[in-house]
Length: 160
Image 1 (spheres, rainbow, N blue to C red):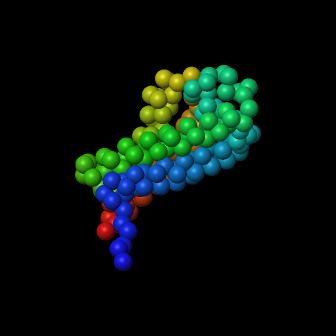
Image 2: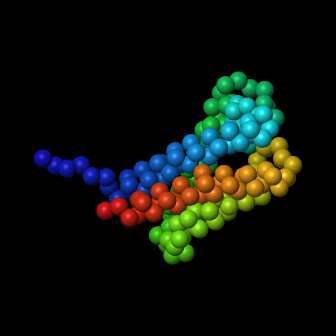
Image 3: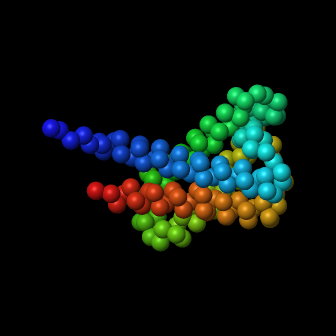
């Protein structure tokens, strides 16, 4: 009887999909909870905001499909950041050092890139900068983006 095994190509794809799903769920939940607790923003508005990256102001007047688009885009972005780190990990020794420090640093890096680079090239309305929002965003990205990406990546590269 033959044993089925995951090929060398499938393994990284499965790992990055798992990372994207995990980070998408954690970061999405944190964004929804944080937005509601800090400003009373409902979950649909969080994902409409994400949809506005492509649709601009039209995202705020559409139906449930707009919300689904926001959820989809959120997971795509989570997957991309996970895939970038997963690909760089075996090539950059610094990324293989202290997982906790690297995870926090990568989370902060993702927050900085999203807020000061990526969002500038979208149709998303620019939010007014606040230190409170920045600190909350840093914490969320360290705990729900950077650390899970680094810890899962480390685990997958250590598997036999």
